[in-house]
Image (cartoon, rainbow, N blue to C red; front, side, top):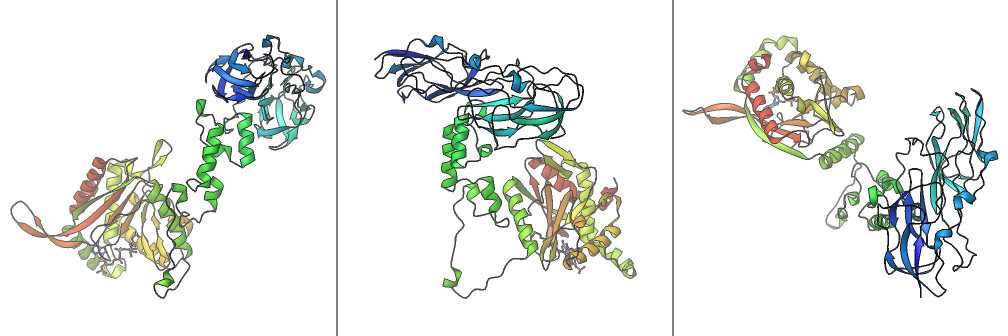
Length: 549
Ligand code: CAO
């Protein structure tokens, strides 16, 4: 048994390529032509096959290494046949590919007029699949800009444009198979650019399976030779998951959506193990594909499988007593789905506090007496809205929204209020509360609450809030933990005020205390800020003249 050094064969015009995947390890038995590693340039990835069958004795490359023609990949103890000769004399697969001038030479010397772009010589490949279209009609295309990515089972490569111009028509779509000479696109030439005679010669010499292994020099399984020197990448490759052709093929066979798989390889590359792990997770119910998640009932959030939870209990309630089943109403279903998302996705914390509203309530009652004839009743909630606007102005992060890693501060103060309706919870929005007085807010609130109860609120009357108040004061209770109305970052819950003995430093005095529950998004707001917000709110409510400050 002889030891054979397996080298990188001719890989076309590439000087150096990076090893992005090791497909075998020491001790593995490999067949001749079996892929050993995947290498990648900025335009193509290709698998390097073994020139000989045998057992891998030593790996000479590691992930991230740069290799070129002649680099030793690994050492194999050749099985049976005498060792293959030193593979230096690899046939230059790329060079062997004839320069397909006739095919790829798109005549673009003219300044305008339609220019056809064809699939250039892509070596011995037949029927390669279009796996990505990187441009769309209307795009301005540069010479050498990548138009599509094609893939065989051994290599993927980008096909650049032979001409510059405005893309009028694309003749291929993802999933099509293409061959040399196929019409790819029609451009409206906009510049007198002499296209390179051969824009791309992705010459892929398929392994010569019939040649006896002993005599066979390592032939490049894939030598995607891009004739143009490292041209500017199109910049449109974002979105194509990073994976070798064989991994893509594997994913396609299993129906795995590659863009949903998290790569664990070099630079986030997706490996065959990642595909297997993804498949296992989906099959065991520990994960869901996006398509599965989309099918899950919105109001219940599915059965929690997407979150890795145990299934929702299924109980035959009729076994325990008489039951009646009623479908939930539309509003409940919609609000349920929103509440569930907000409860799960927001790291929410609630601070509870009390505000002394003794004087404010007295003022409210006397105002209502004075305004009895006007028909507008001033509500505690209207005062709360004004007080909250003052607090939101002092602590602007409470009036913001998260947008990725940025905070969007809103310079308007539209306040939503939860309204209990026969159809379920609705949140009408009062706009520009900073510019309105308590009377106007009370009046609008009455109108909006009535509309909500009558099921007549329009979408515009329920959107755009920057902060929400949920008041259960008219009903009862002490404190509760309201759920934030995303994309807002905080919500104030209010319960029923009660007379309580409060120590004034010398004695207990009866004061009307209003329980406040502020829920806030901990990604945006800190506990200290929340405590300050509540304290400030309490100060204003105990002495409403502070709103004027
Ligand atoms: N403490 C003590 N009494 C209060 C109070 C408070 N915090 N808030 C209101 N009240 C009193 C009012 O003064 C009124 O008494 P009078 O009739 O004697 O004047 C009575 O309770 C009824 O008030 P109301 O609830 O009709 O009016 P409002 O302005 O306080 O609230 C609205 C309006 C639309 C918010 C309310 O009708 C409502 O729907 N509340 C429920 C909101 C809700 O469901 N929140 C939970 C969301 S989370 O599931």
